[in-house]
Length: 89
Image (cartoon, rainbow, N blue to C red; front, side, top):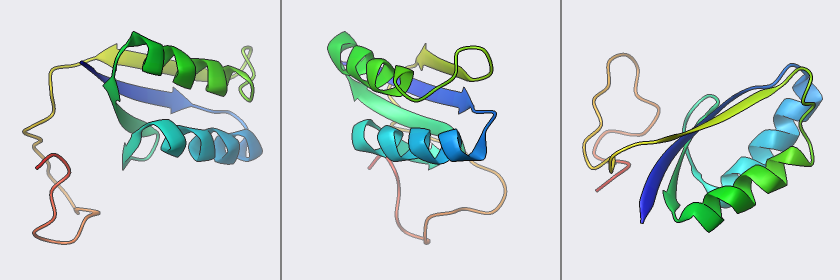
């Protein structure tokens, strides 16, 4: 099983909402425009194929990075999850 961070820059607010709705069907929301996908290459390919239907190749940018397991995540600043709830426990 692989671990991916999927990030995007979407130029149009309407497309941005569509991309977000599709992303949360496949991956876990981590922070604005950043999602965590745990799965195989087929799961990543399915996600990217789904996004390809709504993005504009000339303006939008979607990237997926292979990362180690996120069993430990460090953070500074205001947390978006309530205290005591961890993403990767």
